[in-house]
Amino acid sequence: MMEIAEIEQLLRWLEEAGLDSIEIEGPEHGLRLRLQRDAGSAEAGEPSAVEPSGSSERRRDDATEIVAARGPGQFQDRHPAREKAFVRVGDSVCSGDILALIRTGPVYAPVTAPRDGRVEQILAAAGDLVGFGSLLFRIR
Image (cartoon, rainbow, N blue to C red; front, top):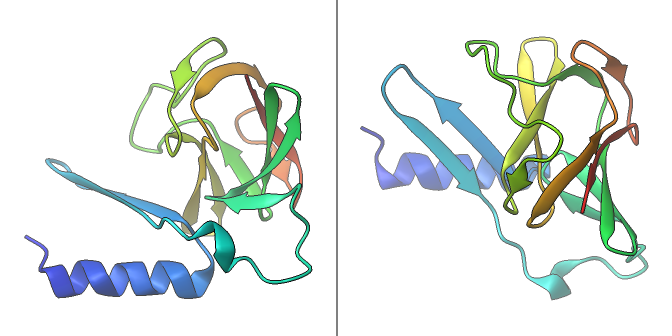
């Protein structure tokens, strides 16, 4: 069982790394942590059309949001210990749900849903190498 001090340390590391969430799974239990930042905490001069969220960037196009990779790696549509993909076209998602993973070496970074909606299109295939800004999902 984790102590509250250990969870607080994980949150500090997330913030220092510029990440918004982490998911840890064991054989019997799992833990998902999400940082929620104040809207006024963005630095002056930062573009407002692109906002960080998990391991994606959000770009608004009417009612559709494009989820883009925040870093390079290999696109993974499922957890390595699971057979089922995180999402499929047509699935409903909630803000913060994990859509996929980006694997860079031994590290898996989550790609999270920026808002509630439906997966309209998956723009990368399992195993694809993606770079910063590569388009991954279309959420409506």
